[in-house]
Image (cartoon, rainbow, N blue to C red; front, side, top):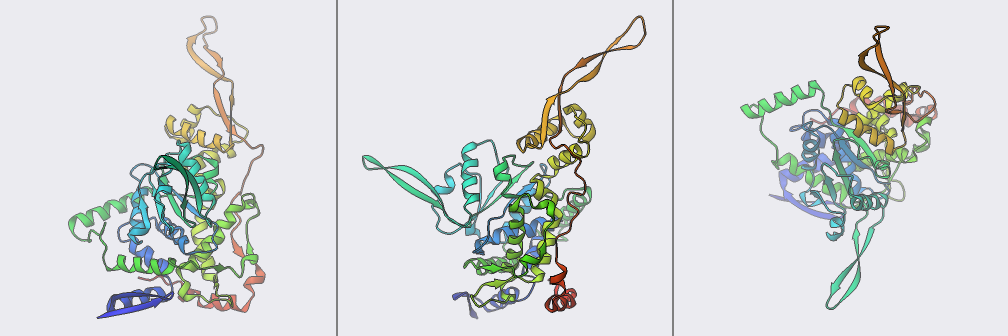
Length: 435
């Protein structure tokens, strides 16, 4: 039996049981949890990354967003590309472009509707690509234009090509991209790759190989089909979202320096509302109203990455920066940093280049005494000589402690409102995850 669902004034035809399941998912709370649980069948851990990828992709359905872009970091073999691709598998295939690209390829597609581009192992050394990406990342609500000359007959004419507004780009790279203007527009997120996750991934591989678990990699089963249809419904017609309690959000003072960070957090609240839009109220003008639950979800997702979001660094360079900040009175050679942080010299130099690009580290000449290996025949002591190697130190002039201690919360005035108290009473039941 065939059933037609009419949503957003658009008729969609499905087999009746599938239509019932789609309608059930979209009209009950925790739509985001349903998507996350679907990806978790093939991805071990990384639930934060999965949720953030989904929210970033949902921007194609948000009319009043400011643009949130994602950079997934991790070492070779840590699963960053796999996590992104398994999550994007839940989205309609025609909306996702997973490939490398030249600087102008994205314009030559000449698409009219926003797509989701995934660029794996991004190469930040190409200035043309960086210039193109900066334009797209800056013009989230507007079409990005590019004029080219095309030969028509015996002459040339100027043609304007476009990248549509609300085009979404997700990057993955071993370390931070390094370009300050691009990094200021990204959320850096490392994949989980500690020993406990590696062991769980190993167990999962054994379970699939032995047949204890089904191999769902690349399988568009019913649950994936439901996610794809739900995503279409939620994002095909962009909606406007208001955050009624925005003025009551207590934002840590030390994060005021970069105003984009607060926009990112507000957009995360709105995007949670986009996923739950059929469980949200509208104002008189038809705009969706974000709830306290959307605020809590946004805090859950944003808070673990607050430090990286403020410094705009991935885990490795951020670790080096924190070391230099704590030891702000000292300077270190690259070899000394290798010894202290227990990483390779090539890794230290790569991290230092990123920090120098962001003006967080000063490179200078420093004095060091080096043992020559000779022994003074008169004193019997080792002979030392003074060298002046390159040294590095934190660019600030004061110790910064407790930089990220302040929690993001709602004001006492907001929490005293009857509607907040009523929400708190039902929170335990409301937050139960969907199986």
